[in-house]
Length: 194
Image 1 (cartoon, one colour):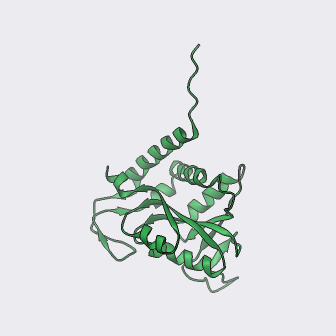
Image 2: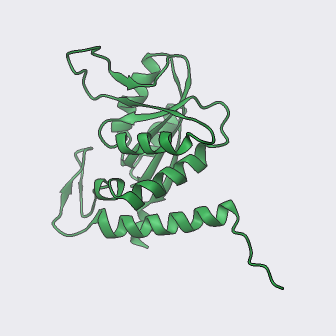
């Protein structure tokens, strides 16, 4: 009797990434209606609006599974966070996904203090003097995620790496490397155009 091969974690992850790429191409990779102005100020013939992917049940679940797989075996990691608004759904989903196996707390860095209540720049389960991973949905030149890097470093935390769903390959990796931070991209624009 032949037994079906049990998929390895790497094979399962590859299938998840393949499906996620399909969702991004279908829902978030915009090529009509441009040119588009990016947060960096640059103009582009395409735009990555990750919200439709991140706010879809399947897309969010896949992203959380993939990112948790990247973080699961990191014993020195205390929490995951990122700059509002793009990081909020992912940080929450990864934290929920991690609960039963290896709990990872989440936090969000505000662009501006809210001016009332605790008036914190960083909200959630952030602790000074810890090791964190930051998340950004799309990286271009790295300016946006550097706001989060500076905020958590000001509180004494160490940024172990930055994870992004899509790196546009326009300088973010170099910007972060100068700060001693590795950029880990699930996909690049080459994957989307391929």
